[in-house]
Length: 116
Image 1 (cartoon, rainbow, N blue to C red):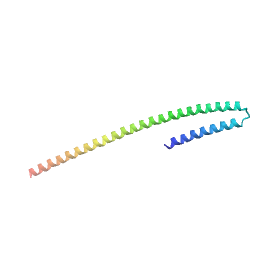
Image 2 (cartoon, one colour):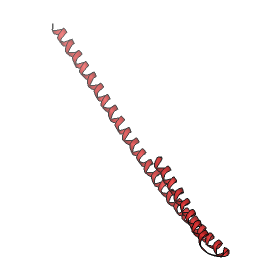
Image 3 (cartoon, rainbow, N blue to C red):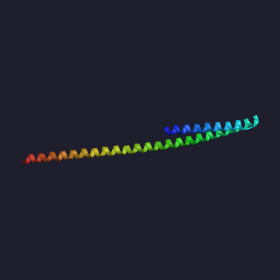
Image 4 (tube, one colour):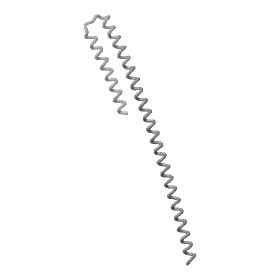
């Protein structure tokens, strides 16, 4: 989450810096008004195109991250399910072993009492 905020802050900072630098360079260049407005328009178009490109890249990165996170969560869920099943299986086996031992002990005691 913090990484996403850092990326967003960086993109906004880079965009703001690019626009500010471009406008400053155009305003301080010795050009007539019409040519200056045309240069500003062209630069604004380039910045807009670059923003769209960066937005697409960011969207793609977010989709990839979401897919990986979903896959990781699914794998973790499956592993946890296998672990729980294994623990339940072992518990059932132990319970059967204990019942069997108790039955054998009971039979042994009965035989011993009958022989006495």
